[in-house]
Image 1 (cartoon, protein in one colour):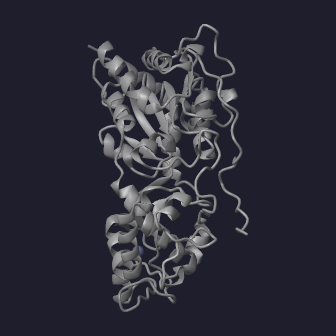
Image 2 (cartoon, helix red, strand yellow):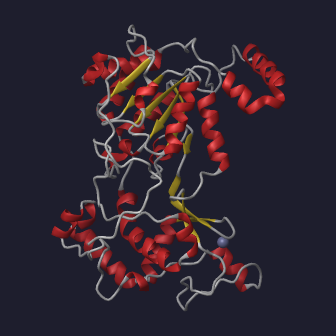
Image 3 (cartoon, protein in one colour):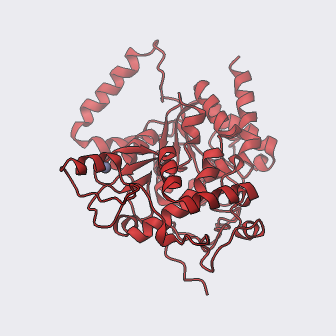
Length: 411
Ligand SMILES: [Zn+2]
C-alpha cells in the first residue's frame, strides 16, 4: 500500500468546473486570437479604481503620492518611458506555458494531478531540519535536473517577449521556476513569484551557488548515481515523467515510487556544503561546517546547507517579491493569465487584486481555473474581448498569431 498523500499547500486536487468561454466567439482558436487582440489593444479601461491601492499602501503619504503622480503625468507627456505601465498589460504565467518546452504541467486539463501520484513534495521545515530528507530530495533532483537543463523556452515565451517589445506587455510574473521567461526575453522584466531552480541559496549566509556547479558536485560525490543517470539518459527513461513509461524503459522504482539504484540507496546520497560557509568555518569563523573526505556536507554541521532558490511548500514568498508582484498589479492597465489554473493562492490573489481594482481580466488556459466565475461575473454583453476574455485554447497556437496581428496593427 502506498503511504497516504500529505496535505499540499495547493488547496484543490479535484477538477475545477470547465470554463465558460468569453466572448462566445472565442470557442475557436481564431476567435480566441481575435478576442485577445481586442483585449490587448484596448485603451485603458475607465472602470479602473486605484483607491484600494492608495489607501492600502500610502495612507501616510496619500496627498504627496497623488500630487507626485499628477506631476509625473504632465511632465513626461512627450518623453518615451521604457517601462511606462500607464496602458500596459501585466502577464501572469503558470506551468501550462512550459508544457511544449518538455516540462510537465502538474495539473492536467481537468485540474487534477495527473503525473506520478506517489510524488511527495518536500516541505521547507523538513528540508531545513532533516539531513535524510535532503539526501532524498537531492537524489531525485539529481536525476531530474538534466531534463530541465536541456529544455528551452518555446514560442509562447517568445511571444510574451515580443509583446513587451511592442509596448503591449509592461511586465511579466511567472509561477514557474524554470527561468524560461528571463531566458526568452531578458529585456522584459520577469518576476519569478516562486523563485527559480537555476541557483541555490545558502540557508546560513545567503550566498548564491549555480545549479550547474552543484550538479557537477553531486555527480562527483555520488559516482553510482552518476553512472545510473548516464544509463537512464541513454535509455530515454528520463524523457518522460510517466512512471509506467519510465519502468518500461528500464527505470527501477520501489513501491514508494522512489528510484531504485542497486548499491546506492537514498541514505548514502551525498551533497556539497556551501563553499562560502565552509571556507569561513575552516578559518574558524561562523557556523561549524563538517564535511567528509570528499567535501560532502556531514552531520554535526550547524550551517552551510544549500537550498534550491525556489519557494518550497510551507515556505513564504519573500516580502520583496510579494510587494513587487502587488505593485505590478497596481500599475497595470489589464491582466492576462496564461497557462495557470490559479490553484496556488499566491497567484490567485494577484488576479483577485486586479479584479478588485477594476482591471479587465483575460485568461488563456486549457481547463478550469480556480474561482473564475467571480472574475467574469460582471462582463457586459457587448464585450468582444476588450472587457474580458476566457479562452481554453493552446497558448502556442494563439499567442504567436496575436503577436503577428499586433505587429501589423503597429505598422
Ligand atoms: Zn553559506
